[in-house]
Length: 481
Image (cartoon, rainbow, N blue to C red; front, top):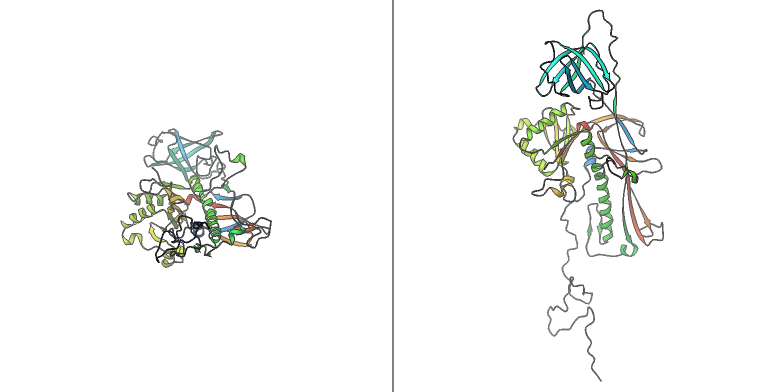
């Protein structure tokens, strides 16, 4: 009878005369040829190593704003203009006449000539710091787009001392003077005007899908996510991370959002975009470039001077990337304890401990209280922190100053007056549907029986936009090469 040599089958064990570890019978997880016939098992760390810590980025808007429902495709709000009459870009046409254009850039909110005869003005030359008090003898519109004011100075014969450069002067009304027994027929009535802004919500979607067979697949790595999901089903981790990523998108989309404009063809495709926080501040707020520790205090004081000309809101929050936060620390290190101490912590119910627990440190400069914290979104290597390495300029955004002010409005849903922050989110909602944060299951797996699809699909949807009211009180810190 012929002897038949039987080669070891795939995964079988080759017998050995000695009890020893051999390549042929040791479990190898790297070559893809192991099975349960292998008798030696490696030591396995079941838990996944969390080398990036908490990876979620959302939370910024929860700190500084609120969320309110809306029922329309557009949210519109109005902001007051300045109370007093002033014009920029004024030209000294002759030694006794001043002219300025009648357009939206001619002054803070005024598009008409509302200076009256017999009013008194201060004419300021910003280049030299000189000013001159003048009396208005006549104020007319010489054309549809140009106003001419005839004046007589109080202390000199004419305006020879002021710059004749076109658009170099600024003027504002400080009062008026009339002789005895005169009428006020020349006074121009000033109708208050306001500036209107609007924003539109965008629809944000995300989805996770897994087949029915894979939902029953047990893994050897234990799942543990930021949302608290745990177990040995890998799809739990994938579904949880999809949800966490979507929650971050809800915040990131209204921080980074842009309206469709310019030469973009997205509008023709039916997309409109939304105005995010950065875009709103760049369009209507204050921007400071390349803030550094060198000369930082002087730069910061310039910010305070500008805040004085705006709403002068006492309490403000600073959300900064790492380098800018260190620049602030270096700036404050040069101040005495009395200069940077004494912060009121009014925003945190006068509790320094509460502020520290939330990651804020406070300091006071001038009449303002500031609460500083790191903004993870600006430091994370997968978002704005991607270009903060050595030798790199940065992502373009170094931080943002957000005022802690509020405005009082009547809420039609609650039927009462409420206070809302300058920065808040509006989301679509009605009695029929709440689109703040929707999630639902489809398919025929995981408790969903909506179709014959042998899979579980987890859907996420939200429709929202950001309202940045009084953007003139916000400051954006940007990087420059």
